[in-house]
Picture (cartoon, rainbow, N blue to C red):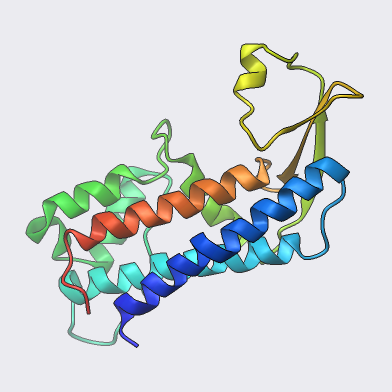
Length: 205
């Protein structure tokens, strides 16, 4: 199977199967305030597949813009928290990228989770995958956002309102402490966006 086919297969499985299973389990979790047995495993498997997609994409970049002399390096998709680290890593892995494909370089730079970049999901996604594959979920309850307030609207559709107690209920990862389904959702959408953008710039192998 060619790498392009593997990328598409993993993405479609993540979108059409795993994402839907996680959404179903998450809805059950917030309604019952109990984590379904396999929900952390489903999230773990989804994140691993999305990380594999990103690393396959990095290999595609290397095929076009990497240095072929010497041993093939370990190739991971660049996710860096500072511009300097991004530039150093990218220039080291893909030394011909910046000059030969400036638009692709600019896109990769734009999606990095630099401070105030708006791409915090990518840093959280990386952090989640690097935590020895621990996907622990904790219940979070809050009465700080009355129904109808702007604060309540900002919580999003995956936070459940318990009508009896007046509490907003969600499950967050222990680390990073963010809404579990929201991060999963942003990762699925974000990785597909990255794949589609790179497809415009790369000859698929």
